[in-house]
Length: 339
Image 1 (tube, helix red, strand yellow):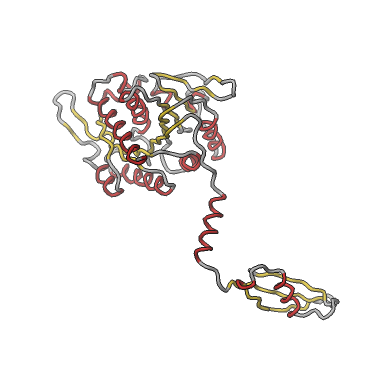
Image 2 (cartoon, rainbow, N blue to C red):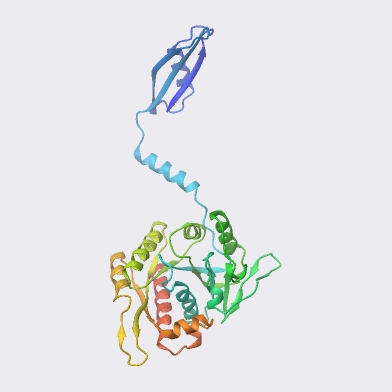
């Protein structure tokens, strides 16, 4: 740190020693600094000189410096505040789009209620640019406002849902910059009347960007579910997503291996179109569990497109059972973490 001190030579007996003495009198931590004269510049103006005095830190504990850095960083982060009425938040994420994340999030929420009807579950669609929950849950319309000026979620299959898709037209592109997206996420988190929920499942956008950081820094999250296909290129991005949650201290509940196998509807022959057990190898590398395998099946796609998720439209099918097993594994992991 260099401090510039100007002194008018018209003052009586102005000298370096007196400047140093003056600074010493006004310095609280004398034992931590040394005053060194590093130069004197006599300017052309009459009777005016300039002294340069540099503070050298001679002894500062490294631990104290690290603590100050942590405190400085903490001041820049928002304080986590729970969502009113919500006990636990589960985020469903993927590093890459197109791996079935939203379909998994919806059927996970329905699977949680199917396994335990006493539990109340909601879905928040945080994918601002590409909201899928309205289509998957067969919901349309604008949310009503409560007396407290909070948005009331739209409900189907007993699951309250909130999505940016309810606030814009179906085909309207959302061309927003980062600050507008952050404002929208804040409203979806804080200005919705969820009532009382045991679980809120958040369908995250793909990637590891502003929305993910904003959500993880603003609300406490019980755990993250990472969805990926067994394909190597998808697993690379899934690993980035898992590592991001670890960095922000969000527990990774496990991986869901989606589209794990295709079974021919005529001969029942199984084909691993996207690879075999790639997510299991990644789970071992990350030290997390595989929560379950979801097959690549025509009925999942057809029912999702109709807004009839397979867990409620075909509850006795092997596909619905696969989602219910994932839901049971998620609850088990949450109990392990809380215990």
